[in-house]
Image (tube, rainbow, N blue to C red):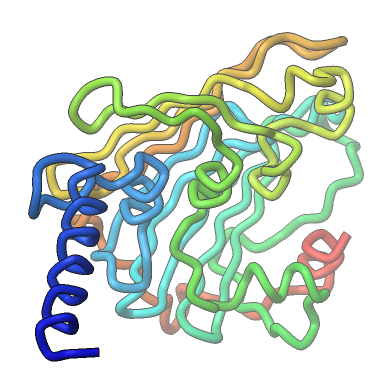
Length: 260
């Protein structure tokens, strides 16, 4: 091949590459990111500032704070126990490899047989926790308590309806980790479970603010709206470990509940 032929071949290759680049828009401008990629990038990571979260509408109501820089997090879970006629409230505090809990049975009827637990923070011995409880009650880089990354992975047809507002559908059969509905409801939904309306919003700094899943009624289950909110980025009060008389060792009854 002559030098001229080599130059022509190189020039032709550049023209082809330039033409390929123009397929997504004007020459020299990269194609805009896909909505799913934008949302995945917006989900909190270990580099995200401390933030507050709330989760409503699912199997449990939860709220708390995550501070990845300090490897700390709090979780407060509230669940109505219909058969028992009371509300179970559990608060958890994790600081690195240490964890504490507060458990209460609001409005529990007398004679319900529920254990009497300390009102102070109960220091937990992770060696006494079952595998699942230990995994959830030690810090291991948890940054997405609402499992929004899972929801985005299970989403289809995502489009940006307006600046920072995305919509599509989500396949609940691929997002069971989020615990949005019980297994019986998932079965009752049938094929509808694979295309449930999904929306998400991202703030001006590219951080996810809300995610909403609207589940239709199915079988004995009423329609519900599952929503995750991530807010107070950089301003939420970072959790701190209790000290001195603010804590007590957890009794056996606490471990029985957590491992049950």
